[in-house]
Length: 314
Image (cartoon, rainbow, N blue to C red; front, side, top):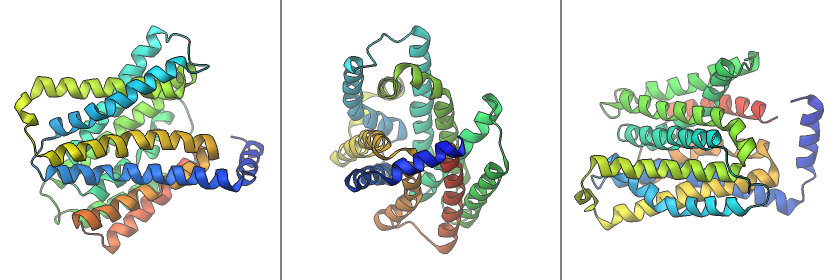
C-alpha cells in the first residue's frame, strides 16, 4: 500500500472515538485470548483418554448450529443475497475442508505430543507461510523486510524447539511437524480465500467453509469410530462445548467486529498476545514449563510475525 494510504489509515485510527477504540481493541484481545485457550482445552480433554477423531467431532457438532445460523443470516444480509456461483461454492467448500477440517485435525493430532504453548506458537507462524505461498503462486515479491521477518520468526521457533527436544514427549518432533502442517494448511486457506471472499462476502464464506469442515469431522467420526466411542465422562462433553463456543465461534465473531471497528493493523497487533497467552494458560492450568529459552524464542517469533502482519495490512 502507498505511503499516503498508510498515513490516511493511521490518521483514521488515531481519530477514532475513545469508546470505539477501546471496544474494538477489547474485542480483538478477547478473541485472541479465547482462541489461545483451545490447545489448553484440548490437552485437558486428552486426560480423559478421548481420541482426536472423537474430540474434533464433538467440537464441530456443538459449533455447527452457530455456523448454520450464520449461513442463514448471511443469505438475507444486504449485499450478500445473490446466489453463489457453482465454482465459488465448490472452492469455498474445498477451502473449508483444507483450512478448518484438515488443519484442525493436524493440530489436534500434534497436541498429543507438544505443549499447549508450543502448539500455539507453531500455529502462529501462518502469516509467514502466507507470504511465501503468495510469492510462489500469486507473484508477490518478497523484499528484505520480509526476509528479515522470516529469519527472526523461525530463529525463535528453532530456539523453543531446541529447548524442548529431549525434555518433552518422545514423539515431540512428530507433534511439532503435525502442528506446523496445520499452520501450512490454514495458510493455503487464507491465500485461496482472498478472492472468493470479495465475490461472496466474508460472513457467507466463513459460514459455508466452517459448515463444510464441521460435516467432514462428523463424517470422519461415523466412518472410523463406533457410536460407543461417545461413552465418555461428562467433562469431555463440557470441554467440547467450551471449545466450540468460546474457542471457535466467539473468536470468529469478535475478530470480525474488531476489524470493523478499528481496522486490521490494531487487530494484527493484538494477535501477538496469542502465543504468550497460550504459554501462560499452559503454565497455570497444565503446569507446563515456561523457562527463559521458551520466552525468548516466543518473543523472537512474535516479533517476526508482527513485522509481516503489519506489512501485509498496511
